[in-house]
Amino acid sequence: MATVTKIALGNNGPLVSKLGLGCMRMSPVWGGPSRDDNESIATIQTALDNGINFLNTGDFYGAGHNELLVGKAIKGRRNDAFISVKFGGLVYGGQFIGLDLRPVAIRNFINYSLVRLGVDTIDLYEPCRLDNSVPVEDVIGTVADLIKEGKVRYLGVSEITAGQLRKAHSIHPVTALEIGYSLADRQIESELLPTAKELGIGVVAFANTAEGLLTGDMKAPLPAGAYQHHFPRFQGNNLVKNLEKVEVLKQMAKEKGYTPTQLAIAWVNAQGGHIMPLVSMSSRSRLPENMQAMEITFTPEEMNTLNTHFSPGAILGGTYLQR
Ligand SMILES: NC(=O)c1ccc[n+]([C@@H]2O[C@H](COP(=O)([O-])OP(=O)(O)OC[C@H]3O[C@@H](n4cnc5c(N)ncnc54)[C@H](OP(=O)(O)O)[C@@H]3O)[C@@H](O)[C@H]2O)c1
Image (tube, rainbow, N blue to C red; front, side, top):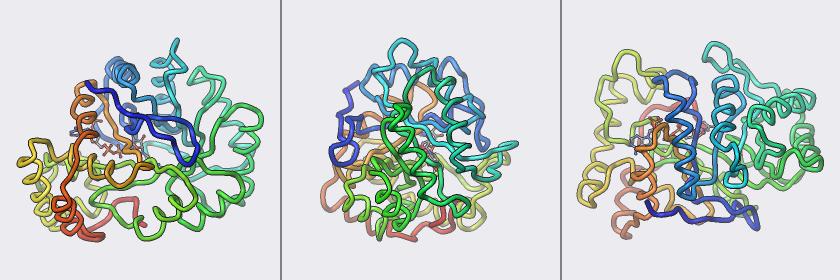
């Protein structure tokens, strides 16, 4: 496997791999198949061996299970990994039930994260969302205090608006914005991405496959237990129409000798040197395919075809990531 190149996360930020490993689906979160912990740990370690140092987790992914997995995988090799942790999400019975962004809660959360991960410092610490329940000055200010105390190295934010990004950045420099981005979800191109670029903030782009829609493997209707049933884009006629759209991606993938997933990742990768595709991989077998995706380039004609065909709004129905 080729080694993944490194980029600075934001202007003058830390060096991280241009491809990030999303660990969320290694734990029982929002449904989906159950995973083998040993294989998950081996996947993280093989990723690290191949230069993928950016690991993404959240303290609410599997109620701490995800952080425990990451902790086991990096034991004895802390310096090989750049660990990104989201906090603030409250989950019960597999459902998102709210946010707790109070400074006392953040101070409590980080204690548990540090123990579960078995580290002294978290590299990138991010409120998973912002709301109006706690002044943003208090949320960002608390992370800034944790940076001063040495428990955190950099501030990140997740799933926020351009206005919130500016505000957060004015309180303490934001190193990275974690945000959903794919051929199927391009709404952020109008305001949020230009704002991140202007402010010199790195973009950690997740859901490149749009909940599997762009893998080319889906068929309508989805199997009875599929978690995607909750989202309008995977329901009824929306799914039929959306899968027709994906045919163009499948055809291009066939012509170029790659898989649709590889092109979906490559398209995100091609959107800028400051944009990192963050991809879930729960088994080592995913790594060669997704690492190879980072080497794919598009001709101007191919890029034009994809951008036109998947223009913002072309995919019918949303996911929970409606913006
Ligand atoms: N900030 C937020 O609000 C937020 C929200 C969601 C996710 N995230 C983070 O972003 C990461 C990625 O997001 P995501 O899981 O939603 O999207 P994703 O990376 O598009 O992954 C979706 C699914 O694609 C599968 N996949 C990966 N490589 C594949 C390949 N080559 N061929 C076919 N399928 C492939 C994965 O399966 P396997 O698991 O079976 O390998 C995964 O279940 C998460 O792990 C999490 O760390 C953040």
